[in-house]
Length: 176
Image (cartoon, rainbow, N blue to C red; front, side):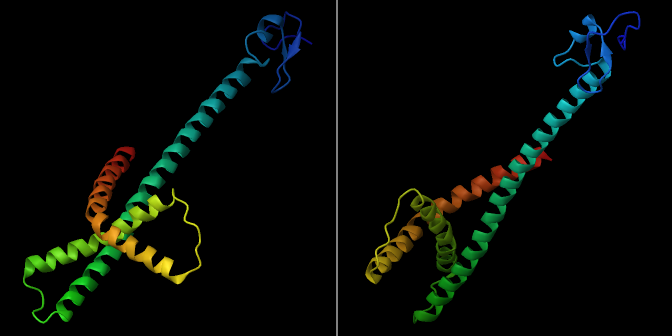
C-alpha cells in the first residue's frame, strides 16, 4: 500500500479514522496517527465540543441567575400578602385604627420583610441539625422564636436580597 499524500512512498501506518495509508513522515505528524483531513476534522470537532461545553456552562449559570430572580419575586409576593394582612389586622384591631400614612407604610414594610427573614433563618437552619423532638411545646417555642427572629432580621435580609437580585440582573444582561 502506498501513502495517500505521497504516492511514491510505501505506507507504514494507516489513518485511525479513515484507514488511508500513510508513510513514516505523514504518520508522525499527529498523535494518534491520522491523515491531514481527518486531523483537521478532529480538531474542528474538539473546538466545537469545547464551545458547546462553554455554552452549556453559561446557560446553566444564566438559569441559576434567573432562578434567583424568580425566587426574589416569589418572596416579594408573599411579603406583600403578609404586609396587607398585618396592616388590615392593625387597622381593625385597634380602636383608633392606624395613626397615619407613615404608620401604615412602616407596618407594611416591616411585615413585608418577614418572609425574607424567614428564608434567611431557614437557610441558616440547614447548617444546624435540629433533632426531632416529639413534644408540641418544643415546636411552638421553635416557631415563635423563628417568627420573632424573622421579624428582626427581615429588613436586612430584604435589602441583601434586593442588592443580590439587582447584581444578578446585571450579570444576566451582560450574558445576553
